Length: 548
Image (spheres, rainbow, N blue to C red):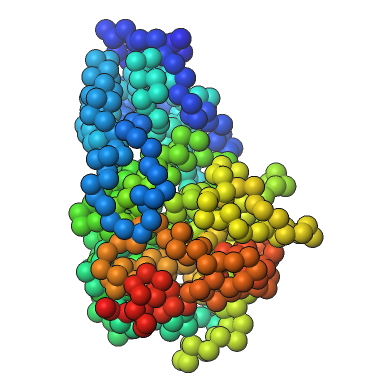
C-alpha cells in the first residue's frame, strides 16, 4: 500500500514513491492538548511545511541478537561488529532512500543508524504519514511543532530491515525529574561531598581517568557558576565539555527553575562526588529522535564513557514502541562497551503524573538495561555521616519517588526473585520489569545544595540520584580498571527475598502511592541506598573498595 503519496509527490513531483508496508511499533497518539497552529503560523499554505528541510534518524536491525552473557560487566568493543547492523542491510537502506531523492548524511553500522535529510513532505511520503503544524507555546521555543498520528510505513524493500524512524514528529518527549524546595521548607540539606560520606563512597578513588556523560534536553551551564560552586566546596572545577547533538547547544537560559536547574544539578553532583572524572554534557533536542541520538552519540564517543547519566523521562505510555525499543537497544550497545547507564525513576509517585487512575512506570528508567534510580527522604548528620532516618520520598502525589511495574518490558532474569507490595495486597511476583533498582536522597526538603544561574538553592528529585550513582560508578570503574557495563546481574545476584542485598542499606518504611517499601527489593527504593565501600568489593574484590 501507499498512504503518503500526496505529501511526497507534492514535495518532489519527479519521484514516484514505491509501495509501502507498515512499520511495527510506530503508532502514535495525538499529543496532549493538541491543536493546530494558527493559520498565520502555518503561513496559510501547506506547502511551507512540506518544503521544510528535515533530518530524521532511521534505525536498522541487528546482525544477530545479543545474548545476556555478552552484557555482564566487561568491555568488549569487538562485539559491536558482531551485533551491529550488517553492511548489506545498511547498503540496502542507503540505496533505497537515496533512490527516492533524499540525502544520507551519516550511515554507521555499529550505531545501526542512518541520518536522512530531505523536504518534510517527501520524507512524510516515503514513511507513509501526514505532518501537521501544531501549536504548543509552552513547550517548544518556536511555539509550534510538527505533529503526526497513527503508524508509519517504509518502502516494501526495507520491511523487517528498518526498525524505527524517529524525528518526523518533534513534539517534546521528556520532562526533567527535579524539584526545587523553597528555602523556608528545606528542613536540612546536604552538599554532594557530605552525601559521599553518608553513603560511604570509597576514598581510594575519585573518578580519575573516567568520563561521565550527561544527557540534557534543554538549558545550559555557565562556567562562572561552576567555578563559584566548586570553589565554595574547596574542589577544583572539573573539566566540563558541551557536546552538540542534532543541532542543540549549551544555552543557559537564566532560569534557575527551568532546564538550567537540571543541567547544573547534574554537573555539580557528578563533579563534587567524582572530581577526577571528565564530564561531557550532550545537549540534544527534546524529541524522541534527539533523546535517542544523544544516547547513541555518548555511547560511541571517544573516549568511551564509564557511565551515562540521564535525568529526563516520561511515562511509558507517552512513548511509541519503536522509540522505547530504540532507546533500550542503545543501552544494550552501551553495556557491550562496558558503559553503565543511570536513569532517574521519576518524581510523581506510582501514577507518574497520569490522570487515568492507573499506575505507570517512567521510561527510560523502566528499560531493563538502565539502572533505575529512586528517591528517599534523608535525615543525617552532615558532619559525621550518621543517619537517623531514611524513608521513601513521598511529600505529595506529584512530589514522590517514581517506581512500579513496567507495562512495556517483561520481568528480567536477574529480577525473578523479587516481590512487589501494592496497597493491601500480599507480596507477589511483578508482571513486568520492577522499577527502581537503587535509590538515594531525593526529597527536596532534605535535598542537595547547588548553584544555578548565580543563585544558591536546594534541589531534590530523582534527577539528583542518577548523577550521584553515576559518580559512584565512575569511582568503582576506576578501581576495577574497566567499565562495569550492565550492573544488574551483580547487584541482584545475592538479593534474597525479604533481605538486604550486599552493598545496600535497605529502606523499609514509606510508600510512593500504590507501592509499599518492604524488606529487600521494593517498587519504591529498589535494593536500597548505596554502601559504597561494600559495593566496591562486588566489582573489584578489594577490601576497601578503592584502588587496587
